Image (cartoon, rainbow, N blue to C red; front, side, top):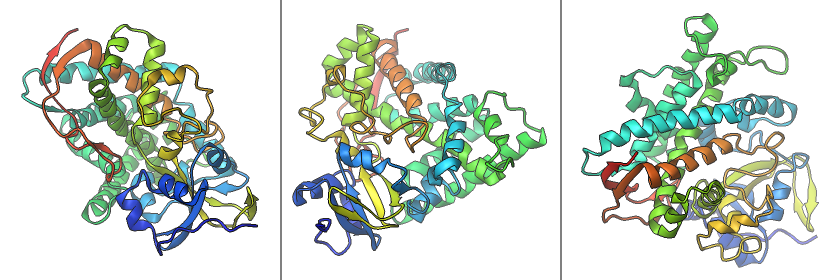
Length: 416
């Protein structure tokens, strides 16, 4: 049995921080394999890339999520006790809670709410010299998802809640003060969300029955007991936080419209099929989150390589989405490539892969697609604007990546 190729460095943490989106794929090519072993935060870690590795990674008989994510991610991005760290029947039952919120009707309602706030903000933008799209979109999405989720949000709360929800995903992979800021904001956000869950249960807050807050507050575990209020808070934030993070994807939609102007013309033609291709190509082409983690459930062998029980394993999302074995000219932006895509849940994994109901694939993926399609329509049909000189290079050292300027627009005019 051949050993898994080993990275030459003693610990790869600093190299990962310097190049989070290229770390796994570049080293896999260097070692001529779809996997290699390194140390991350001094812990042995198997890193994998490509569709075959993704299919293996989402085999729940071989991998589990409990204890996989580093504590720094649990205390910022995911929260403790949430669906991301569950396995087996407990995970499937909790996942059904989120999937029950993702009906086409409910997703359309969220898109409509977001569109209403787009319109309100755009009217304000017409009087502004420069609009930082990323900052504005985070506020828009905070307002929309709170209303959609049954979470009260006073006007004075909009800015601080936006900062809190942003910190959970923007500071999770950071080091130093930015990470500690994210930890502090997680504690504050947990207290806020826990108060909402407790108020619903006490009858002092009337959240609509179909809302996320209502569904989570009254959700029961495998033993028929209500979820602890702190766990309910974590899961409520697991609805709010990822929706606000879609601001990153919407900025990439704007970036693609600017960088590839032929796409704007085709979107303006109003063909829904092309809009889907465009959104999917944005999700494939641009860097969002680079990787996901699991732990080996029991000793097994794959392609002759040993996977020891308990070993932390990381799947390369960005590299898999740019794997030349699946995607022709992966470094080029080509929406029409999705005309012939086979629909595999393992070769296109921007928000995770595998089966929606059984695996740890992001249940908010449909929300991302709907909001990105709405953003593409709005930016091509509802407003006109100019893109002034700025640094539009994608900063791939930050998580999630963004244009260095966060995408500035000016001379905004409302067209419809």
